[in-house]
Length: 37
Image (cartoon, rainbow, N blue to C red; front, side, top):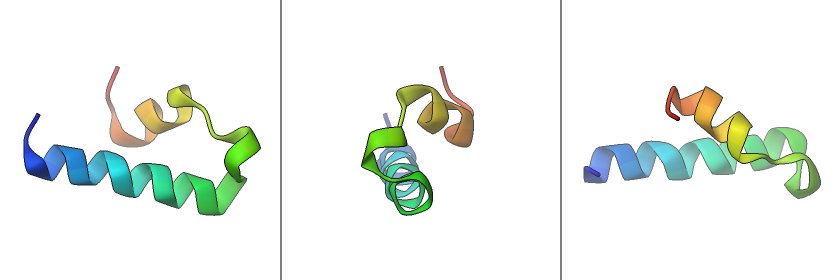
């Protein structure tokens, strides 16, 4: 994994946490946001 990709994933998690909260955060949502599997 490149440092850029890792940063993209971390930012997606933080963005989603702000949008939906910890209880609603899912790996599927992170994968969709970052276009990964």
